[in-house]
Image (tube, rainbow, N blue to C red; front, side, top):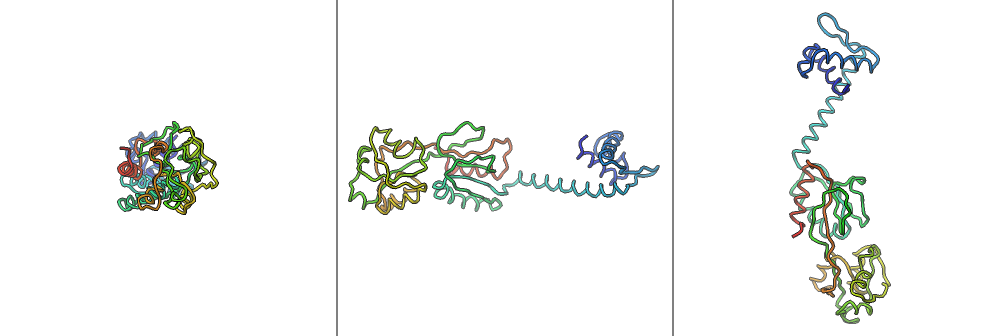
Length: 294
């Protein structure tokens, strides 16, 4: 039998004073209530109630069990109330994951606006260029750059992730300005160690059928490559989000705009749920409003 229902019926019998009243309150027959109480007594190995002609008397075991049942049922009711509250209002903590460059330069400023709009929602943002498991790692949503495998998750398309090649004016004054990918053979192309086969200088060289010398400098963080480019150490091939402000200010010069790698698809990924919690629903709506694909 349903142990939780049996506990509820036992408490109702005690509170209401009879099997009949408990049965009416739960829309059950009196014999069915009796079966539930008998099932509890069998499980516990002792009598909970002693019946007299006028009322039920709790045994010592029954008194202890009654108090624990009331506490458990109260905790359950509180948990259900809290869950209902979460489903009614956007509140709680959102756990998010994004790449380092996108997360720090594009997403973080938007999260400040989002939290101002929804003061009862907190955010835990983890930045990593490693692929994470949304469910196993306990995230509510993750941002993914690149082609997606079929995962059964909901994927909302966002604006594509564009790349840019840039160098400092001082570097170009000394080494010249490349006009085509073939000219890159005579330049210092700063390397990003986390590039996959379809990324970076090697992919650009294959795409245009040219040779590009191996980089003398390799790093796993785009910010370091940006700093080297600003210092005149070479050409950086990095996200537009990372280099665009420097180009706009004149600290860097955009290069080979007609030969750039194609933009990468970008998505917001989250579990499929017919009734997502309001905190996730309003976050998805907010991100699509700000970063949704045109």
